[in-house]
Length: 235
Image (tube, rainbow, N blue to C red):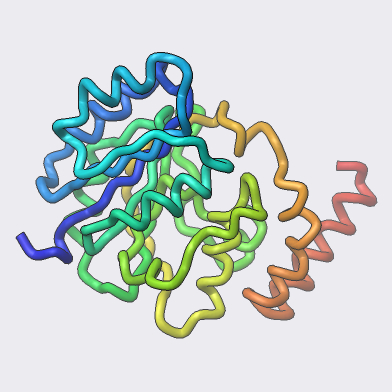
């Protein structure tokens, strides 16, 4: 196996004992053979650590210590990546068989490959236009990144919920990476998590500026027009 075939699956956990084993089993069930699992736990106080110990022989790396949130944990995990590709999954998400199909298509180290997830029993989001990516963002459980993308690049932990959206937005002004869509449903996304139920106030304050910087004036003006329209209609 060459390094560029290996996918580093990063799993960050905190008090996730209700879901964790099911998530791990969905990774183990993948037909794609070149997967390493990296787990960073935020000092869980439930049965999560016992589950991690029971599965530890199947991990490339794991540790448990206090952190300052999900993106701090993801940044720590990135320091232990050995693969040529990186994928992030939540402990309450499920990897689907189509993940392995997408994994077989990872060829271009300058492409950030993405598919769709299943959310509330339905396909979400499909291929995104620049405007929809700016407004909604690509679900991070739908994305497999080339590991080179994270050399010298980490999540900005000022954004407690939307740091992945911000980093993906910034890709649109980069010359060396581009998003490449493949029509696979690769995970079941749990839409009861914090990112679905709360807003990132720092991100909401900076969103318009980021859209202008990363997507340019036409997308920015469309976004502002829609905002005004929604405000006037009371939505």
